[in-house]
Image 1 (cartoon, rainbow, N blue to C red):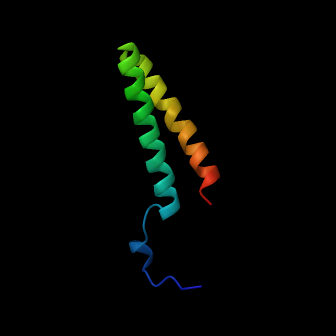
Image 2: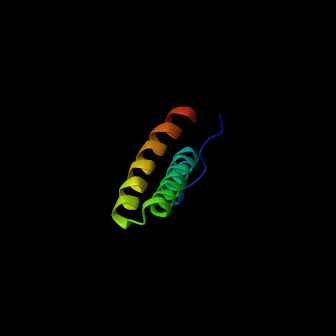
Length: 66
């Protein structure tokens, strides 16, 4: 196992896995929001769908990316 040679102030805020899970969650939320807006033409409904899509996407990708 390689040792961490970075100084404590230079460590990244997020690990690679966390960044990927959050990025995929954001993309899922954006997709859900855009599709909802195109279907209903309602910004509040699109925002709720985007939030739900983000949460579901993060949970899903957290489970499958190991």
